[in-house]
Image 1 (cartoon, rainbow, N blue to C red):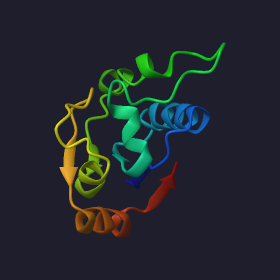
Image 2 (cartoon, rainbow, N blue to C red):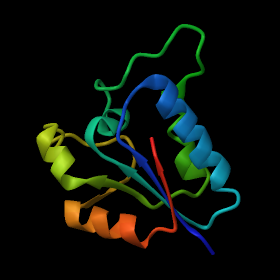
Image 3 (tube, one colour):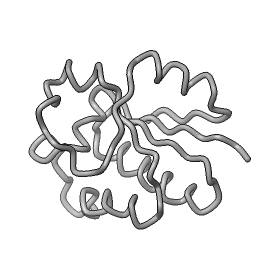
Length: 117
């Protein structure tokens, strides 16, 4: 079975929306799916820091809750990004596991397929 890693490192609405759709779609076919939020992508996890929704677009932020319904439980954040972006004291909206930069590099190396968003 393929190991797929999807990394959200940007918080632009259109890229994040497409990335979330990709994650939800892949979850039907891939068992070993890991989602990582780092750098600007962390904004997607915290209330008050999210990118504004464009007029007429679907509500992306409500769809983030679908990750749990689709049984996507391997959601991680890069600890260094949390500290750098000063999110360390905030509680993300999803249950996540913090990993070090070294663990992230190892995860990149061990994943067969990597998608950077």
